[in-house]
Image 1: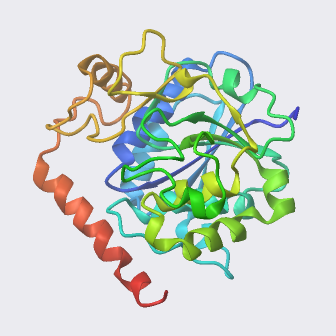
Image 2: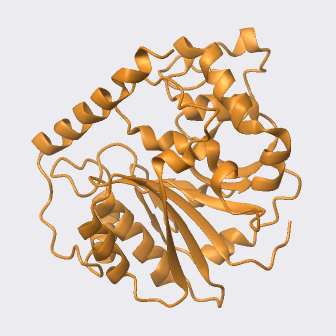
Length: 297
């Protein structure tokens, strides 16, 4: 699927994680050496005007353009975010609805979790031909469809899945927007999560893996290299678990140093690591925000 449009990236972020977003976008900016413009669409889950200005002033490249989208505008009127028992922010579910609010001039887009650092030119990922696949992604090294752990698809037998079906991590996705729109995939994913609520421990990842099963292109695992694992040449580092801005960060130290190298190129330079109390307050806040969803199931 070739396109002459600018490179399109989408992220979702709240005010607490804007530090991660700043480092991520700076890493994309820093490693982008080809000539394409980059259109960044940010689903804004309460980022303050001051932090929006700090983020914009941290990105000096004339090739990167920020587009702000509110959470309300990211959720179609006839849909709602699936119920979610986790302490993850609600905004992660907006990736299900991306084809509904991204301008129609784009036929594909790169989705990135904000807890990442790009180590290659984003154009290398953008120019991967995904053909007629629904998306391109990296297999999750921790999980399989057949899994007795908290993740995976625990009811895979009832759904008719072979235990060897590949399971992808949703932290980085190259999405075939045109095909998602044609098949109205957002509706199908939301219904899948709702119908299997008690099994959907990572709700959006669960639903996407079921609906997109065997219809996605497997990327080089270095595009989603977990910061907990050794990798000599990561294309993109994913800080699963404790984030590198926390005092209790527990992944590989070499990757934390890379994170701060990029963060120190932004208006958040010389940030002091954040303590556990703020981390737990953030998790509690995420849970409280989801309470109204419980009464609308």
